[in-house]
Image (tube, rainbow, N blue to C red):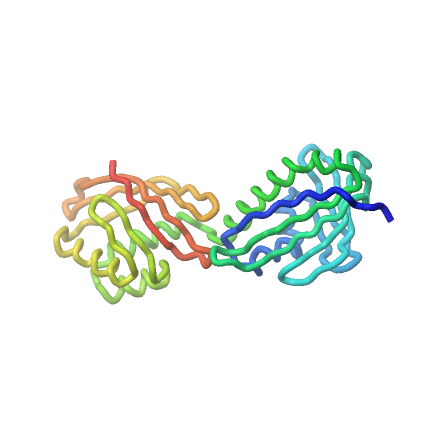
Length: 254
C-alpha cells in the first residue's frame, strides 16, 4: 500500500447543526449542490465517490468508513491520474458540535508533498463553498424571514407580537439602531409596543431583496406613517443563529 506521508489539515466552523452538515455527505442532491452538477456519493463502505469539477475535470474515490453524524473517510484521485491517481490519497472529514454550530476538520493525506501543496487553495475554496451551501439551505427564504420581522414590528397587539417574535428570534435577541438599545425578547416586545403608542399607524416594510451570506442578512426598509407619508428608510443587518433564529439586529438609518 502507498505510504501517505504528507498531510493537509483544515478546520472551520459552520453555523449549522451537526446533522444538517453531515447530510451533505449522504445525499446526492446536496453533494452535487456543493461540488457541482453530476457529482454523486454512495455513503457506505465501498461506495463510489464522484466529483465533476467545473470545466469537466473528474475525481473519483471509494468510501472507506462512515460514522453518522460525525465522520466520513474516502479515497480521492483524478480520473486523468494527475496530480493524484484514483485511490492515491485519503480524505477524512470529522464533524464536532460546538457552541456556534459544527466544527469541520478535514485531513487530506498524500503520497507526495507536491500534490498536497496543489490542494491547499482548492480545499480553502471548497470548504468556503460548503459553508455557504449549508447556510443557504438552513436559512431558506431570507426575504420571508425579514418580512416576518417587520410584520412583528407592525403588530399592535402585545400578545400577538410576542408570539410572532418567539417563533422568529432567540430569547436573548438584541436590537440596536438610532432609537433602540435593547436586549432580550421581553424587552424588545415592550420596546415595539412603546413605538406603537408614540407613533400610531407607523408601518415598516422591506425594500428590495434581502442579501444573505453564512448567517448574516442585509435588508433595506422604509417606514410610513398612518397618512402614508415617508418617515424614514435604512438598512437592517441581521445575525442568524445555527437554529435559524434571529440573534441580533442592527438598524442603520439613512
